[in-house]
Length: 210
Image 1 (tube, rainbow, N blue to C red):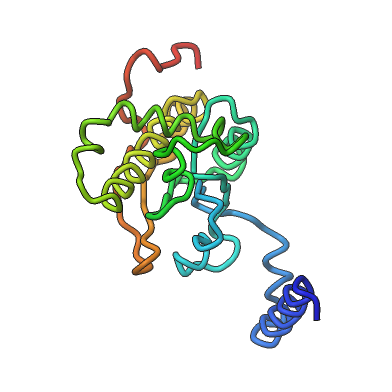
Image 2 (image 1 turned 45 degrees about the vertical axis):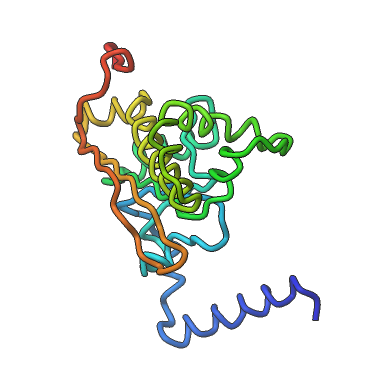
């Protein structure tokens, strides 16, 4: 059996198991999508949103990229964000990073990694802004873990800078923003930061014509 065929066989087993438990399961799932949460996570295969939060399909709208970055020029992410906020009307947007993130580790190095270097350049900026704190940590694993945390909180702030979030806060008083980090070694999620709808941000980032 070829490697990819294992995935197809697994899908058949999954579908059969779900129908055996509930004959109408897929029918109901196909008719409506009303998740309350948008999850912006890392592409790392070890951090699947549904599994680590023990939630069934249909409850979390998911966007993933390397190192869970929110960039104002990323039309992919902004399209997901707009759809989630304005169409699905999610109540919460979660940025979830994870300890041991390869993107963050790469940003701490000077290795040339091709196009990846362009993507993680904003994490290098975060490192530069917090260099004294991060470099003041002697243990390398702890140093990287701290930058993972700082990156998550910075991406939450980047969400608040978007016109999509600011307009939703003004008109609909939602969504709340959350920064979380997942531990690969213990499977636990840690809360890092929260921005309730309407939270104050630096005036330089505020739009006055929404």
